[in-house]
Length: 225
Length: 225
DNA sequence: TCTGGTTTATGATATAGGTCATAAATAAAC
DNA sequence: GTTTATTTATGACCTATATCATAAACCAGA
Image (tube, rainbow over all chains, first blue to last red):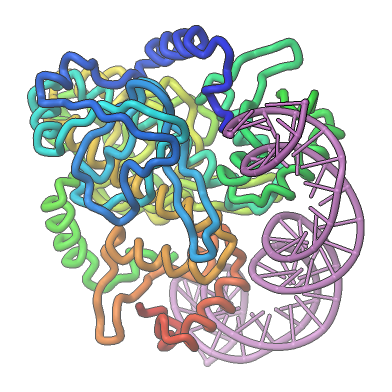
């Protein structure tokens, strides 16, 4: 699994990521606050399931270390990745607020430590800490924005657009590093496909076309934009 | 334009809709509060643009009467409908919280009266009225949930699934009325296509197949599920 | 009741992306 | 260093949906 963990100076990269995110007011909830409301930590192994689609939401989850993806599988077993989440981000809250079931599964991409708060405690936390609401609103707004942008692209049926949109959004959202050749899109071809609803082969062929058109660079199999 | 306005006892339907929504804690902001923060009303004609994609967000918008859709157009002029919004709902807030531009346009589906609050005033309102935050969170969570469900479907490339998912989600989200033959999906074939990223012809053919399979009924051109 | 516009409908054909098979290059595990 | 698994890659072929053309049914307004 690539994504973040293979990054050599991951910690350093991450810190600048957090700072940028904080400037954008997109932080998670402070650990100290969570601990006041009975938070507990749990370690998930790589590929371990955190929660499953169609189950009721029981906890609030925030990432201490590692990374997580939310995904769906259709009848033929084909995966669709709703999104990746990494250190300090939270995921899976909407059903907590809606008394609804999860629209997707959550799975550890690599070993991940999560801090969890029970639903009841979490709702109490929200009620008693108005400043947390603002953080939550910005967080949800951010994710809704991503979904809106991608929904319009995915619907178009045009593989080039889908991928370029994913890349451009990923650059800011996942904070990929700027290198000499441009931003390094640190996703496997398979992940690109699962995020856009395209097959691996189509991704491979499309990014080659995009390279010919000068929209991106492929150096040593790595994609730069 | 069909959607809501053609409904004979629209007002009555709407009221039950509101009540249900309120039980689900999915209300908008009270008019009285908005008026404390310099809200003004404005009438939009049918098809009039409320805001445009890629523009900065300047106001909070909430619907007094009528209905609104958010949409995108791709390079070939093909429309994708992000969603419909109707009385008492708000739309277009995410960019207000993110200092970001709109991911889509907003357009009046039918004549609509909106109540608007400037961005600065709105942020002040949010800061001074913590109870409004909860409403906003539930509202955003709801929309994020819809997008997650539809994203997974749209990505599958399977027209039958896409449409059934839209119908089932619409039944609860738009609160379509239950009649003798089932829930009446009060959308035109074109709207179904624009919401799922399919072409009209494909929608027409697919729902006929679904009828044969017993997944829905088509009576007098109307779709029931 | 006529008229123009929208919505629904159907057939013929094209094509983008999927599917399947196969393999080289690379990375991970032992 | 060797083995195994993953990732990238390419070709041949297929299929679902788009596209284009055409028209009937319906509705709204004059």
